[in-house]
Amino acid sequence: MVATIATILVRGGSAISPGSVWFQLLLVAIWWLYFAWSWARRGQTVGMRAWRLMLTGESGDTVGWPRASLRFFAAGLSSVVVGLGFLWCLVDRNGRAWHDRLSRTVLRVSAASRPRER
Image (tube, rainbow, N blue to C red; front, side, top):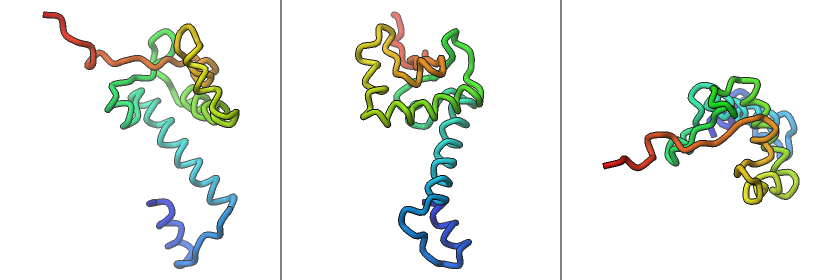
């Protein structure tokens, strides 16, 4: 919403034409920036924090910008084929989707969500 309002203001209040390729690319860039920055910085988006999920590399290392970017664009591929890339986690022996396999990342449950032993 903020990007749309800013774009309309920059254009002097004129509307953005439907199907505008440059505007769609702008929105994808903003979307990529949010996810890649969140994964590279803390390994979590806001939603992942709520679900106590953490994105790491296969060996538990942090996910940098290149791997976060690869995961973002690979997730696009996972969705383009009718979501099969996402559904793959249901049959994968490690529960990983195509974009996790391609980017060598793993979704883990963060330590804060594990039940404490008494």
